[in-house]
Length: 106
Image 1 (cartoon, helix red, strand yellow):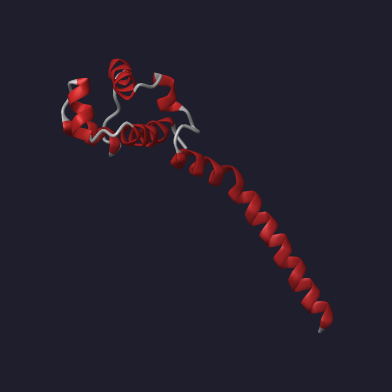
Image 2: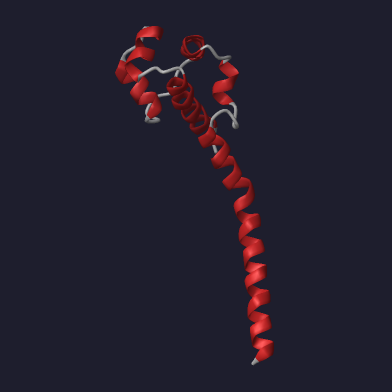
């Protein structure tokens, strides 16, 4: 998962946690609603100054917007990335063992 993806997921999560629409957040940081929409759609990435304004409007530290485990969606994405191969390997091994057992009985 890249830093932009992490930022966007966290932005959406913390904006909603703060009870803010894109329009309300835009008002708080003195930007257009379209700009917030473009950020959340991955079409634009904010400057450092804008990130500071967003964090202040959301009452969080700017670094929280880049935390891989900052939102439930990011946690889920990270979990998938880390454990999917392990789980697939375990399932494959169990399936192979089960097939082997059945073949022995034939």
